Length: 451
Image 1: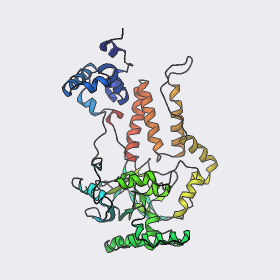
Image 2: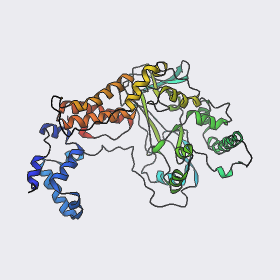
Image 3: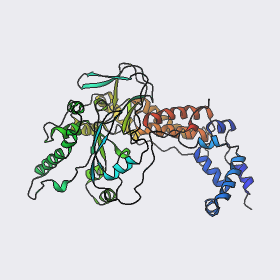
Image 4: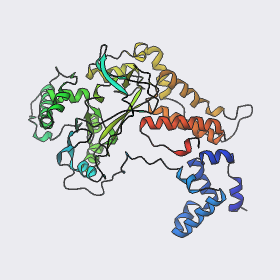
């Protein structure tokens, strides 16, 4: 005879009551409790809204859950994140390119955006929202030996702290626009076709530059150009040298982009179609490191990029970000950096025989899973050791700028919740909170010590 619900409720994996009240019950555990103690998925689907509400109230009462506990299961509201937009249906102007000017306060941005993105921006209340400010200026721009100019810490900056929030001078598509108008003829060599594409792209980008205020034009042209001898025009060269790709933070999600992504065999086109790049007066001067101490995040609501400390930065230390995947082997990173004219001299590149194996181990880390059966003679928490080793490698190699860092912290937080180890769960939870703040990821109150 199967156990009744009340009996099942008592048999749920025990969790220390103080741990439960402090970190509010892990989301995964909560889902399991709902499954075991309330109703099955099938039953839930058959319940009316009122019935489901009553079942939820019973569960909350049985576990002494309050509304504050449930709030801790959700991410802290982020004023930078307006909403997640969905293109409900194709629109006539989805693929129409629009010249968009994002106004003061906070600086002017000249943009070439699709009609789709223009509509998304128009839906954001109070667009553009104000830029965030630091209490005291966190950086200075000065000479960086062998690199031209660079950004340096004007004071000590703690991990997660805001360094700068800046609106771009220019935002343009990564993929060539309107290629049907480019003079590409049959019989051209590959070199001639590439040059025709570069000339066409310069012709598209130049009018955007010319719409800038004179001061912004001056700032734009003072940025480094590492594409002086490959056929790129002056505007395109600066964009290719200094642009930060915006990835999923600003992209087109139209039917055309979806179709090209599915049907195209050109990997470069698939990786750029619907994506955008952005150029900044200040942030584009932040130099590269394969062990960066700062992370970037673009926000649609303020139409700006925030730079935050990925780890503690000392006064006078150069502030560095990553231009490539820092977990790649040194040879592959060097290939990615070559178009920028960069020969990286960071510790990882100078001693790659020591660094590469560590990065490979971090990249190929084992998944941490709760053992179904506890082995005799083995520590109860031995299954957590691989994640601890990964964290040690990350911190030793200064890979705080990699997504693997907060992913590993999340694994360790979860693991110690399962072990009912409140002290360690909260220690890793607090670290994860700050790591997520630095990376612009969602943050949850359940990760933190309650005051």
